[in-house]
Length: 444
Ligand code: FES
Ligand SMILES: [Fe+2]
Image 1 (cartoon, rainbow, N blue to C red):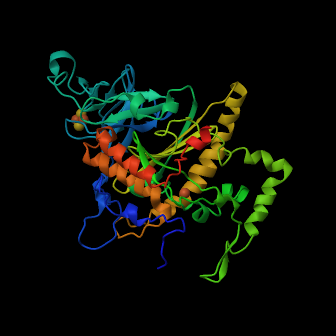
Image 2: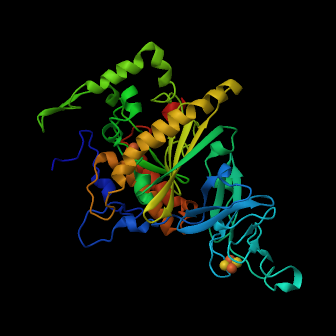
């Protein structure tokens, strides 16, 4: 195997070893000496966080909806004061509450004997037994109810045992800053940790080479050479995402190692030329310009881009903020929840955003591109030894953040701040005197 060291002296091994500061090992390099560090990241998700449960639109007036997240089965219905999320299993004899009916405003009745629950999970009446003294159950039995908030039509619930945190602390800021937010979800048959790391690596040019968006405009080549990860709140950022020179690399490159060009031919560029024809140019504008000229949340290193606890991946475009939130359903299935935030200047612009969302995001990104990933991840083994390259640095950063969070009560804000400061200082020191670029360069 060739030496993965790059010419600028960056040694990925530095990141593969447990840091003397954090004692976190992030890569399974094989051998029996160590357990797999990935096992420290909870298999069915971090608890004590808010998660998106479903779209408000999916919750009908008369019929509850069943959702499974973090291995928990939920019954979602319209409570007296808004959407309610309670445990799906009836405490009487275990029927599925989401199979029931909402006969009375703000309640759901179990399909078996008609135990009827309100939004706090309390039994209010037992329809099969009778009103008043005819039943001894009402007021005495309840199921777990989940603290719930509806924001931009998305139902968020708190999956934790203690008091919920302030949603504004844990959820993306564009949900609260007047942005226009649209959302979407797909289901992938892979563990959430696998789907999350998918957006941290450098697969885009290769796996998505036949995606419609790549045919319209080939994806930019990137380099993370010399980049370091830092922790900002619940986010793991890279000190920069490209050294700039990558953009000048030609479309086809000669690989003497295999005696051939990659890509093998230029046929795909015919599509690019086709989409560049004047009548079709408007299609380009369906997507967001890349590279972005500025960041969506200037100066906000926690929320601008990269992985974020408890399982988000964020990409800051100039005028848009994309989030793919990998919400565990169970150990082998993940709901990919997509948020797309923009700041249209007027109602017409907002209308245009709404019109193009089903094509640019739902179809071309979440499905066309997304399912190319899902197809590969569905067969990926997450328990074998791995060989990381320098391009996997963001994955290392995410794992460090996730493992540290897991060690400190499962919350990123419980990681001691002096530890974070030391880790960040090391990342910046490794920049060999160069200032960190990160998202800052986009803000100037
Ligand atoms: S099992 Fe639900 S009412 Fe009997
Ligand atoms: Fe991808």
